[in-house]
Amino acid sequence: EVQLVESGGGLIQPGGSLRLSCAASGFTVSSNYMSWVRQAPGKGLEWVSILYSGGSTYYADSVEGRFTISRDNSKNTLYLQMNSLRAEDTAVYYCANLGYCSGGSCYSGFFAYWGQGTLVTVSS
Amino acid sequence: EIVLTQSPGTLSLSPGERATLSCRASQSVSSSYLAWYQQKPGQAPRLLIYGASSRATGISDRFSGSGSGTDFTLTISRLEPEDFAVYYCQQYGSSPWTFGQGTKVEIK
Image (cartoon, rainbow over all chains, first blue to last red; front, side):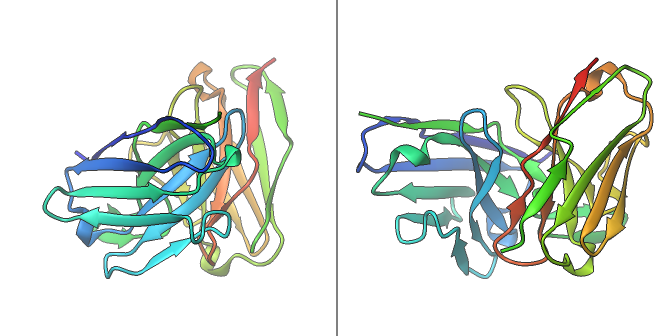
């Protein structure tokens, strides 16, 4: 069974840094496309970043240059390093697995499995 | 960037009624790379539909997706109490991946 458990959220002052973790089980992080998606309080969903199995990374314009996605294969864990945090980064951050197999075929690109989320609050 | 516009913003219906949710893209979504998610308060989103019309494992056949190009639809044939939630569409045909703003299906 695929499970994703995020941790590392909390209250941080503007300009500060925080590292989110996403511990995975039931599959291998390094063999899948993994992503972070966030949701500001009372708002919709926003894609943040993706890490491909080959190692390529991409970011939303809103976080480019401030956030870094990475993984630790030995721990089967995904990370999001967030620097220079702003009030507008306040959100629940979800990690998601984009790998999905059904009926003998496998697909990617959509967010098949989600963690429960971790809340990041940027405020002084 | 492909902008997805969902309508209506809120749909007020009674259990047993049919719900029709629309998702319109600002440009064509390649290969019908469109997904739908359901989100209940305090929970993570759940995948319902991918590839515009394929149901995810374990999703009731009350849910169906259709459409191509720029116009997509999620239909819930007969609303059950557990279906009242917020629904989001998402395109994965081009980067950046984008979501619609959501449609809330509420009990009338």
